[in-house]
Image (cartoon, rainbow, N blue to C red; front, side, top):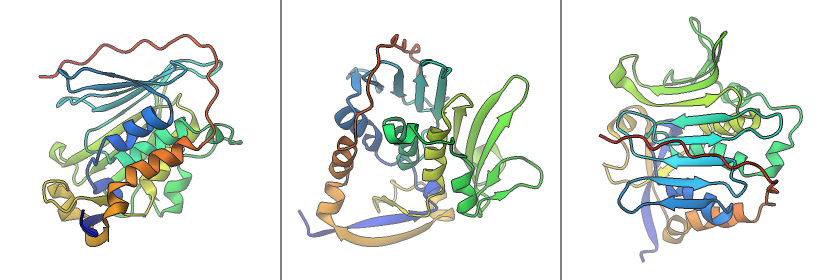
Length: 256
């Protein structure tokens, strides 16, 4: 193993590309006790929480979101779901899944404002729409409410044309506020995301719109980054698992 390796540091992070899915799936399974359903003949991973109330599905789908998270009703908490596109950085999605598996965040009172991390990062209100937009105008987050709909919607796009959409995310309005805040905090974080310098690993739109700095990092830091993350999450107190009705997995989507 070489002493150091080249790594691209990408900002803003919402343009860094998807990254390694195991940044999410490995900690859920190894640190948080989520069970794994995997079929070697199907490019799909399904993880279920220890209390059987939450189900995370990662499924390559050219016509829909790759990531989906469904949660059953618990007490007064209504069922909720999240769906996120393939190009969303895993570190941003992990902001939500880490909050979901951390008992400390669930006891926060009063409920946090999901817009707060964005405002603190300099996101601004739009002139002709609700919600907040990143300083570069590329990312947008909005809490959409009408008579029939209550949801949070996040979008990253380099233009208003359909071809300009990079990724989007839908979060049920029923989702606990601290989970949505975990997502927006990770989205607004100014820290760059590390990516392989191989040109295929950072999409072309990232190269054009993002700031990319190539640095040399100790090889051990890169190789064992995931292990350190798993260890840190495993050392958190575990959420107790009350006896609840299991959540039925939604039917798999067809892949064309």
